[in-house]
Image (tube, rainbow, N blue to C red; front, side):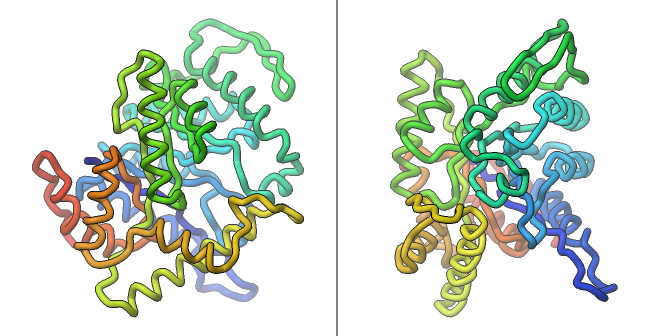
Length: 345
């Protein structure tokens, strides 16, 4: 079983008159955590892309991963996800290929359509165009990676004449494509495209296992071999040795989920994904979290593994203590080979 990291870093904006806040601190802490995670045996890190939050979530994920790539040697560098409707696809392919080349072929190119209304609103872009913009951008990006001779493109949103996209990526024909999904239809689409699958940290455990089983069937039905490492399952993990600690951690998760959902909801929106009662939202947050004692955490991961999950991307909420403790107390139970020695604490 393999484990990676999942999540974000924060660059806090100083308040007026504040001369002490260093906006880069959160980014540097994230880099340091990932450097140590590599030494502890984690396989990868997947970082989000978000805009206009007011609380400093990562916006330029490829830039951040390029810095991390220079500090690491084996850690896979993943995007979860680059939201294609907001990007010039050729410029994005150039930036991604540069990172892949400089890192020695370690980029995992995760892509998505976007879901937060405030981001589409901020870019003055109709959310209704997300699907069509994504499809066109992905077609251009694929051509940019695989075409060695000049090509042209005439589309609804983008046009290019006689271009060869440089540099070439280290991984050929291109870095692995990963795509998020959360329904039977979207999981099938990922399989049809031949991409790897990302499942979100707020997907209920029973839904995760159902999606993994479906993805395996869909892959094999198309004559391809299924590799369980083609599915990355994001989960939040926190060590809570007392009930008070557990209650506080679950409350932080609940409040954080509400804060993010407020950014995602369009005025008048009634989509089931975002609009729940307080009790339903708390239940979702509690059931999707892997919080508790080491024994409880190991049991929940074992249940995922029994259902076919072999690759878990963990959101530790930026806690280096949890990163270290998980490597020390949990990972050895799921390792089929000797684990990398602990990094110095």
